[in-house]
Amino acid sequence: MAYVIKTRIDRPRAETFVFDAQKTMYGGKRIVAGDTVYLFASENEGGSGLIARGVAIAAEAVARRQDIERQTPRVSVTVQRTALARRPLGRTELKRHTDWDDGQPATELNFKLYRQATNKIVGVSDETAAYLDGFF
Image 1 (cartoon, rainbow, N blue to C red):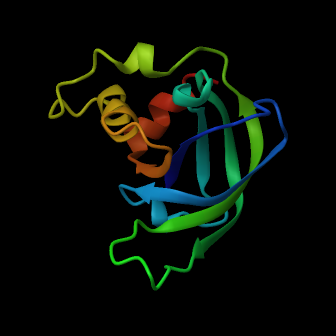
Image 2: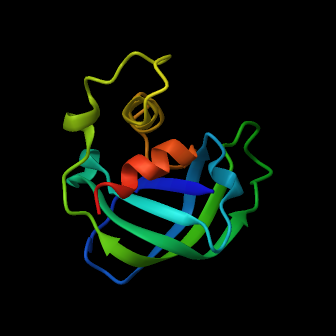
């Protein structure tokens, strides 16, 4: 399966990325080593959207805290970069894709990444992964 990680990325050209205790949504908690990962540098934190594709080389669920009643699952992930994006894709490009029922890859990304603008790991469909591959 393929996943998107949208978070603060300080070194967008790094070979390896380590993301600790990232919030998960839309199946993001199922990420495992070997999965394809698309990295989005969060625009809320000065990033530019899609920056790289990689493979998860480690993924580990973070234990839930006992003192929090309702807690979003979190995962720590290490990603080895395999490619840098050649074309821009971020909030600006996805903003117009708001027909949530149209089944388009760009709409899936807009819904999962920007409807609730928090940083997160999300699972994406095979069609959306193929769409993202077109940016490399």
